[in-house]
Image 1 (tube, helix red, strand yellow):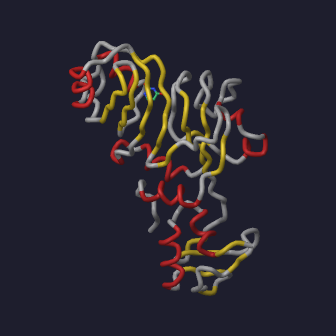
Image 2: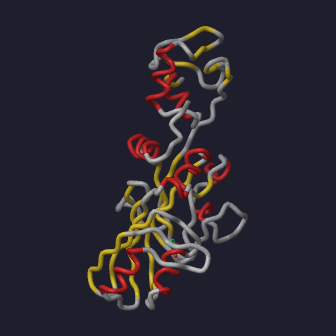
Image 3: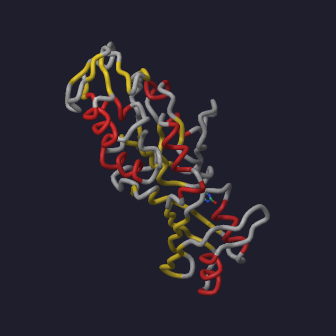
Length: 237
Ligand code: URA
């Protein structure tokens, strides 16, 4: 048994707040009758729920964060190096996929989900969703930092302005709002430096949980999922 508002937000079609609003407005029926109480408990296995007459089936939306180790691939393909092999067998059958890609040698925060619409929104270039990476590199000077921050013309696109902070010439953090193939490595090469290691620390405002060792994962909290929804357009009708 779960709350009616959670049933609707688990569908991935509505945020919890929109679900509550719809329920209170009488737009949600259970077994054909309007049910206006967002906290009403229903049986997710058997209830027939509809919003404005459209049946909404129950599919539990799942979000996990993984501390991706090096030498793993962000793919759902049947690949011995796939990050999916780090999950227990029962979670490999629920339609999860990585929300974006990290290179084989990039480590750190990778989200896994079965929520296609929200993942699609978060990865859309229009969303400007922030991702922060810690890097080590061949020494960078202030001029190279300024060029990286201003946007770099690459063969197929020009990177958007970004933020780079240096701890010393070979270590720092970069925050970008895009996620093109090998983007950060290509940006550094274009200014005459080179990335030696890259680790993602945050995605859409969510930091990697420092208690996760490489290869470990955990479920996102409700607050973290809510943060993802505020950073995506996918908050319902
Ligand atoms: N930029 C890269 O070059 N590689 C990654 O894995 C992520 C961002």
